[in-house]
Image (cartoon, rainbow, N blue to C red; front, side, top):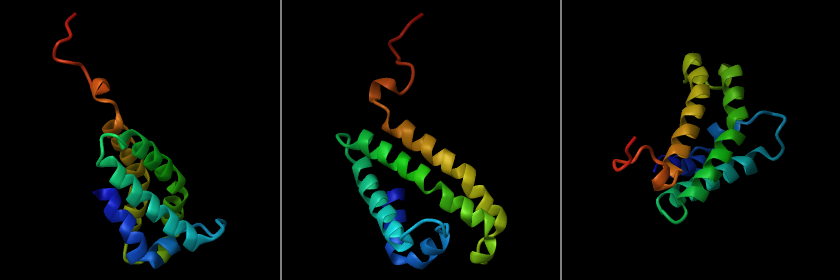
Length: 120
């Protein structure tokens, strides 16, 4: 649900996401909308066991792709006066946590740790 809500927010508050875009990227508004669609579709896919792995890998790719926007935010706190610079920098390692969490959630059920029936 986190990804779905974040994706919808790309359309509700597109201006904030537009400020996040590094100036060297072309078509920034299209990228804002495209990443929003990706988050919504990926979030919906995560709700289905059939599509969870594909959605998870897509979301991981998206999280890697949007990392430069998070770096841009941290380097330009003046564009985000309502957010503490320490929070802007804190978003960077949070991206790694989200990637790890998404990967963990999308692993096959038989790869989720030691089974109760295993013995040494």
